[in-house]
Amino acid sequence: MKRPSTSGTNTQKSRPWLQAHHEARRKRTVELVQGAVDRLVQGKQTVTIEAICRMSKEIDPQGKGIKKAGVLGNKGAYSYYQKYSTTFQMAQGRKHPPMRKGRQPAQPPRIDPDRDVNRTRQRYLKQSRADLVERLLSVEQAYAQLQLQLAHLQFEMIELQTKQEEATHLARLPGSRKVKG
Image 1: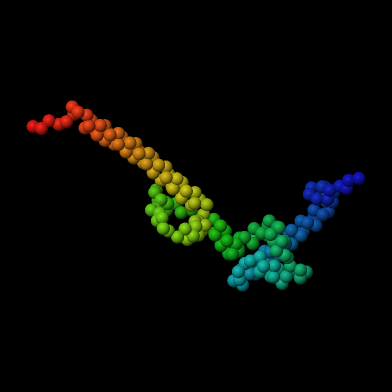
Image 2: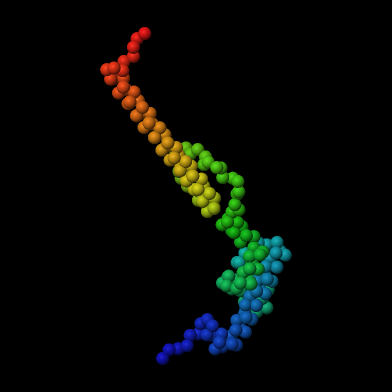
């Protein structure tokens, strides 16, 4: 005999009183986070999840406070934390640096064949994905232009070699000597 599922929407349908209990806990978490963040901001302290958890124990009438998972798992509490957290905003800035428009040259710079490859690799690892895509596209474009130029030069070289061979062949024929004047 199968037992009914106690997760998800089935729980909400079968136990509506739990919904009110969970909503009260979510609301309590948001209120504690807001109170802790406000007190940290007033005290000119850095707003971090750990600081919020410590401060929430001080301001909680029950003395329990909230845990890190409570902040991270509650959308309202987490968004309030994000709004005031300088460390969170700094981390976001590192993940997504602003696009630098107009900074990439049309042609990639001259590349020294004796350059330090490890240093170059580290520099590339610090760039954003968008910057790397722009760099790759400009290098591919330059490579395509060089390939086209090489093909033209090869055809010109073959044409010059053919003309030289014809001239040499004509010079060896018996009736093609120049008449001295």
